Length: 218
Image (tube, rainbow, N blue to C red):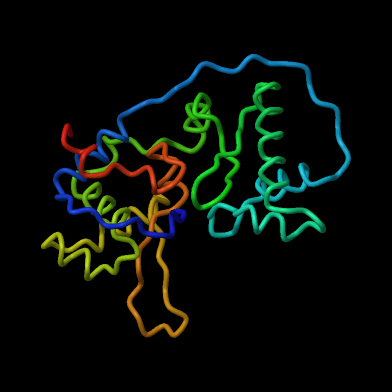
């Protein structure tokens, strides 16, 4: 499964059910108790573990996850399996020290992210995307793009039977969607979800979007 720029297999779901599921996800909370703080780790020499940590801390320009092969490629004589081991060691250290972050693993790769238990702190500074701030129409557009991305504005209009331009602009401004244009410039812009979309819905990847069976109770 790819990151937020890659579409999962489209499911035969109605807009009503998708919108209801997204509204429910936005209203949910998965707070966890803070981890106990242990002794601090002494500074270590630069090695595979610290290099992996630094790369994930900086992140990719497009916000996508980093694969273990990409991480291994920047280090001499380091294998993808050793990258996995470095990530496991880092997460063990983070948990021991009660760190505010952790490395999440998904089908698309690795991403350094804030722990769920501290998302409220982040929201105080950056603002949380709440259900009350997204209209049903905006949730409808967002759910369409999430499941069928990349999508053009015309394709979204056709499925909804209504103009979606202002809603798409609003979602782009809020950082939930992004535009992608072909290098030739003669094709319509396509819309895709962003890493902020994943954070807003408490997802590590698009693999975790609800499927038909999970939407029956929405």
